[in-house]
Image (cartoon, rainbow, N blue to C red; front, side):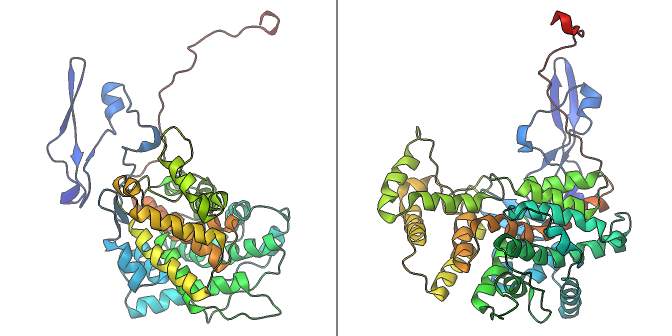
Length: 434
């Protein structure tokens, strides 16, 4: 335990006539925590924290968020710098190993990822077991979970070498699986990866090329895709990351753990936020209807809420949104998109949110989901692929967090407790007397 993690002056808890001391641990930055691990054994009582909003479930060195100040750091590096100056593969290396790679390390890591992008040929038959209209996220959950049936040589979580191989395989193969899910959903043949393309360009190639016609990947769109991956790579102990850690705490293999994370991400309150933002824009429909919806958003008695504005964690501007805003406008300019009613609505809403006193005072700024939904639609992805792309990007964060959990000697199998409010003990009543 480092000096910053050692307990300072303890917290004091009084229950009836008994007094208890609880250790306080300080992080390198951010809030300190009160250790309640022995609370039940010493007091016979649990803490109650629905949603775990005030509970730290682990120690971590990967990602730090300050929602009040609008700060997001990966291993200490601001997300804006990683997105502006680096690329996704560098960010993957950083999240996995704790430092940015030098030239030799980056070359080796890129080669390892590139050489693992192919998936087992029998997986193609797996895809054909899904209904033609299956949601791409349903396919992702099934196929990623099935990887453990194909790669037995990297499922022993006690072996550091196997964990390393599994980590790289997942990062490399998820784009191929995501592209296959997209192709299957639109009835087009699968496109194999190409080793001469970088990570983001290769993904776009697999999504939008067809065997009969090679379509060059637009470098502006590839760079935009790369930034989207960086901005979604990790976000501390969110619902899906906590799911991966919880599944991993039981000793489950990494492919199963990531499949669990994908399933959690599928929820509209988590990974579906950018799709919800796009649905809202479609509901508004045209610029002339915006004033009515703005009035509804300001009416506290109206259940309507503007999707893609504000954030549960960030009480200031989402630092990822600044980069995503710039990227969004670069893509729209590159593609010369004009006259699209939905995008016209989005741009007008953005202007209002950044200038209207109501939104400014309440800090309801456009968040990353608002801009990423617009950007992905402009690139050509249907809305049911948005969460798939989120899962693709977040895989490296899940794997980094899973690895950290496996290597943490204090980690135990997850077992939240409860406040039971059901029936007390009662006797069984025979059927003829009920």
